[in-house]
Length: 346
Ligand code: DOR
Ligand code: ZN
Image (cartoon, rainbow, N blue to C red; front, side, top):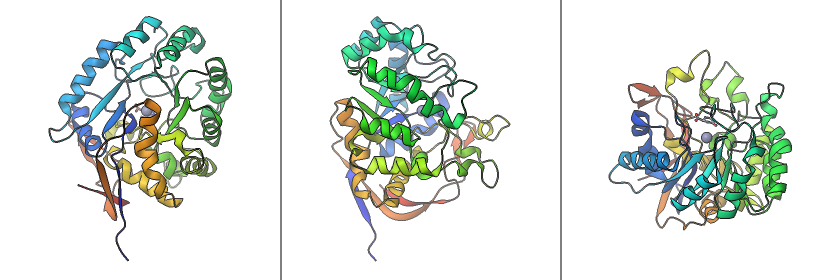
């Protein structure tokens, strides 16, 4: 049998955590090798809340891009309760691509996130006016809501009312994990889109809990039941697939912070983002839909051109290393010491 070769327009990562300092240095070559651009998440410590913070962070990222690569970071601001319409106008003028909504306490470094979304209505109205998208971490944080239900409850209590109140707002429902989220995005206007991670397409919640606790499969929103994974695969390959695009949510944490009595949420997948997605699309016989998901739907939503070069993948199993260097620590990748069915050809 002939080796399967797949050449597609160079993809972009519309949801990426690059961190800062030594961690940034360690992880950026992986994204720069496959992606043309990436939307950079602002949940640093302290978070990226001003235009000056974002522009300075952008310079640090560009300085860390390996010389042979052409990789463009697209910067975001972290919304807090103190955000103002003036900040939004400044952000738009400075080329900031979007603002990220972290409900306070929802995930890693979200303590400064938004407590009362409705108090931010003037800010959101300004975003709609100037055409700055809102990127949403869609989970409620109420103690009495089960962690597996937090996305579905967010849709009911927050997202649905928000979309009704501000239909002109461009909104990306980030890293969706449920059939409910896939349905909402599928049925919404073209102002609404979603990113989907490789882990939510490839794994269900058994990956975290069967055979022992597996901290390297723990991320937020947490992996869900198999029915939800199937719904996501259907969404990215179905009739409304143009509303879904690639966002790895690759979120590196040092090994000791993951393998701990209170392990951090986040999965490091950037070393093989596109190969992992190829595996997922192949599972549902939809490799012909991979290019749109990885390289076309994101640029169209954001009003940017597609990348002008291509990448090539080969159906050839590749062993994932046990770990990568991460400053003076170690980073355990998704699928460490197992294989991935596809390999990016340099
Ligand atoms: O698993 C996650 N890790 N989910 C998030 O929302 C944040 C991310 C991180 O920054 O580590
Ligand atoms: Zn994220």
